[in-house]
Length: 419
Ligand code: AMP
Image (tube, rainbow, N blue to C red; front, side, top):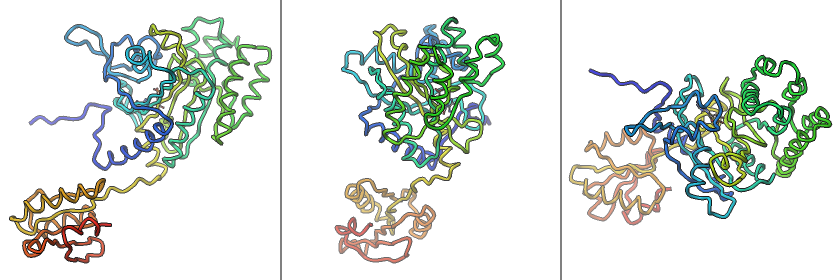
């Protein structure tokens, strides 16, 4: 006999896990929607070039690329920002800005699987297209931090502006700049030094600067004296901080945040949590004002982020955040075989009247004692026992599974008795 195993880096999710994941998704998407963001969906696979252009060497290395029967090179999406920009150009470019979009879907990266790192993983992300203001930067940061607060997670928000680093490297080619940014992202200081051959001491001092609140920005201003471009980028970052301060959002400025993706042009941010070990980054994002024009569109500014959804759920578990219980409200049990049809009707009627509550009907044809045992095992709140004697008077027996009390109740009054 053949025994099949899941492909490496993929997971199955049990009903209990899906209950938690759906709860997290509902809270996060609720925060997005309360700010006017609307859900979109993009294809699971795209033409490979879409992700080759600007995704960054790390993502390019880990893409799931295949050739279809028509000989086209396709790729399972490793991230969604490139797809959203492509979609914007195909479907949404004529709409009045800003476009406030969000998505929740699986991504695929041929990465080395470990705790918190999978080959199929989910991201919930936001893209705000069409605005260049510091409010829009601050709004997407706020969406991320409000979502995590609402979930009850403790986290650390780290901010930077890539314009500061890039302005120190402006005499290098874009490829070399990207190589340095990737090395900063990976904390590969040896590589940075080898590319810069020790000529740029300021950069190394800069990326070491970090701290809660604005202090690190003041230190950077001192360090970057006389470098106009770098100071302008710093001022843009400070404009974002002003909005965050006005909502009491706590942040850390960290000039070593570089992000692994090449399309970022301005403010960037990452969110980290305790309790996840090495894979503790649960969110990453920033401003990418050139990507849409690289894809052939007009000059269109944009900013966004993605939560690593799996890591958010895992962080909640490891931080001991509680999830709502799943509880079946009612199990409807025919007392004898001939009560099946009536039980079916009573269960349907209850579902209509008690919208949003869970009403299960026994579908196993079991004896009543077995149904009661099942209801007790799944911790159902009530069992409705449908028996011939009571039914003659349009009644059923209602059993409260916690108190074990039973009473005879008119079918018409049943919905009102289920608290
Ligand atoms: P990125 O698109 O690389 O900026 O990633 C955004 C977020 O997705 C990260 O902060 C992680 O939380 C999550 N993430 C990235 N790669 C993986 C992976 N292989 N498995 C699980 N989560 C991931």
